[in-house]
Image (cartoon, rainbow, N blue to C red; front, side):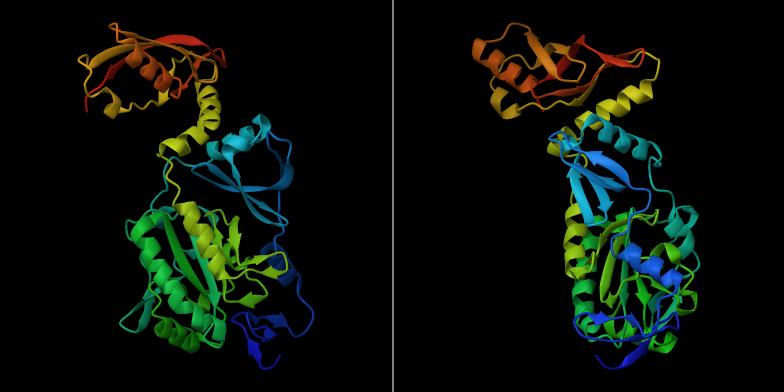
Length: 373
């Protein structure tokens, strides 16, 4: 223990090492207790979740990425495969997604709590100075990363080059899907600027004068820095450098975040893992109206069928209420081996089923196929 430091909020802290601990010298205020409790894994509006193999948990759904539901629980964030959730829990995921917009709005017009709190409070380094940040026509980020650090914090200064490198790599891969924001614990605006310059921060910075007014982000301030937090635009937690009282560090958050962003929602395996969810959403969207079966995952191994004379086929498929192919036949008549191969492929196809009176029902459909690219 040693030097006492004054954070941007004006509260006096004592600093220890690895990480640099931010501890109040006197009793915590109510606001600080709330912030610390949230940062250390407290979860508001928790729901019950259960998997098909009987495992249960309490937590709040904070995001759906590809095949995973991200659930913030008291003992840390959990990533649960959608295919593992039971029907009731899957319904909760569908409820969550029904409240989301189809595509992120423009950042400048976004109404999510984090986006609104940051509006007109961000700056960016230009020619050695911090100037107003303008998002232009960029869309609202799907995820915000908040970096809590300071110039006086040795571990922060050592971590900065790693974060700049990771940010550059992630921006090349994921572009506007995310943004990182610096939340300073420096003594003043001059020290903040010095740290931003020294680190060469390419991301937006919360203006020093605005600190204390961006609660959807600042509520996740924790007991030590450097700290990195991934949150949804709603302000809900995805990943934190603290899990309970344990400091796991910003590198772990970077790893978890990158793994999450690398999920490709259009990839075949990911779509398969989302099939039950999409069937449920399809049924809900249909309501009382009747709707036909729709292909969801239909793939062909073109390499197997290059020598086949018939390039245009008609598949007759029996689709179950679960959207699974139960029977398949093909016209015109094919060699037995080819027919067997196509049937095996068709059994792996997935459909959004026919819906009648709010219920999925089996149906037979005819699907034209082309065996040439």
